[in-house]
Length: 157
Image (cartoon, rainbow, N blue to C red; front, side, top):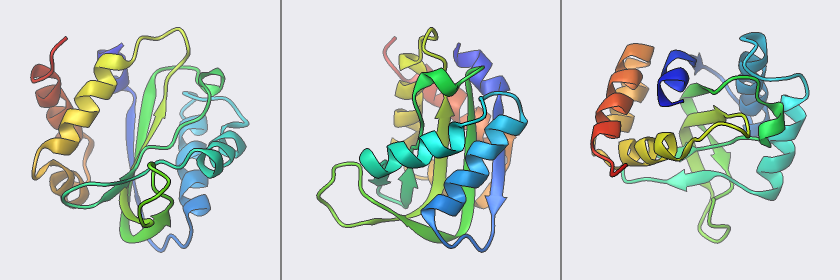
């Protein structure tokens, strides 16, 4: 499943984003247009983000990990939004200050797919000091896939 997600990654650079909802719409619609997710994902992601925020403060920049119920997924995939200017997300922990998000990693994983190893690699990627900066600056799929593959080698399976 890890390899399948690596095959189904799309990166979108988003300029002039005004709100979290605008960004979530663009990313969810990208998953739908690639036929990796079902129609209805847009509303489901926005609804879930209101109830369970996904903004995360990291050492280098704010990120978000939005997703919806697995019933909306067709194939294991991820779309990454790279923002020129940050948008505000509520924090995952529900108590710290809002997160100025520059990178959004929207996961799309069907219920029957094991995804723990991918989440571990993604989490490990966030801990590499310059990985988020490389993704934000380079903005290319090749860099992200390389960094994820590297992170996957450093996790306990």
